[in-house]
Amino acid sequence: MSEASDTSARVTALALSHFRSHRRTRLAFDGRPVAIHGANGAGKTNLLEAISLLSPGRGMRTAAAEEIIRKPEAIGWRILATLSGHEIELRAEPGTSRKTTIDGKPAPQIALGRIARVLWLVPSMDRLWLEGAEGRRRFLDRMTLSFHPDHAEGVLAYDKAIRDRNRLLKDGVRDPIWYDALEAQMARHGAGIHARRVSALATLAAAQESDGPFPAADLALSDADGPATEAALADAFAESRSRDMAAGRTLVGPHRTDLAGRYSAKDMEARLCSTGEQKALLISLILANARALKHDSGFAPILLLDEVAAHLDATRRAALYDELLALGAQAFLTGTGPELFAELGNRAHHLRVIDRGGESLAEEVAP
Image (cartoon, rainbow, N blue to C red; front, side):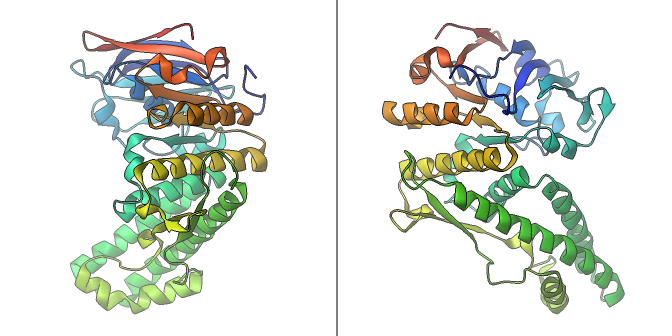
């Protein structure tokens, strides 16, 4: 299988201008997986970050627009991409927020989620099960967004209402009229957030393969027995006002949810698994996410797998590559050396990224 199927989301052209270490980079792709190798710091991950910004949100590094601008020029950055037949332009100048254009017309970022789904696995996620709940919520919401493009709008509306409520709490406002309206919004959007998360986890569970090369994971929300319906959330917010005022913030609701994971075959909490097992579980979840999207929508997502091959032996690398090709997904993979992608051979598009005087250069190479 040398090319992704016609139902795959794909990037066929990518041009970067003053984007991090890339002063000017132009690339064309044919839908095959893209294997990118180069030394640490050469600019490989910056290519993946640019592609991750072709989806709603702040990308795989959650960076502000200002942080992406190439130094020392500091004239602003620009991404031009052909994504599933649409012409996308993203740009930001110093002191401004990111602007999105789709087919020549200004568009909100959330519109990108209706063109293609983009999933990623990056080294910072390796400690997902060991660090705070915020990272797990972000992981959960990225998965949920891949199945429900309207999830981003619900989360944004909920976050705005909760910020306004927290401001009232910090200011010591006690008039219930102010709280009633905000809590009604929070309850409506919060119930939607919870329902979409539950739906996403059920879809993901059905797509996991217990006999595959990567171990299946059981996922559950930590607040499964907590308030989930609109009415229950509204009551919980009202009852918690005094406690919340003492804390200066809202202490109940879906913004407090945590995600619990278990290694199914061993019936072991993910946080207690070895480093290698935790990585394998993450790969399994990303593949299940992609598999479910392909099954439900007919479109395989774009996958960004940063430094994933370095953690796998040759057998597991080959298994991963075979899975990606079977999915028909356009995957972008990075690694320090070409030997990490030997099992792909000419089934992939191979690139080398080098640093030349502080500027990243990408060139096509033979497998």
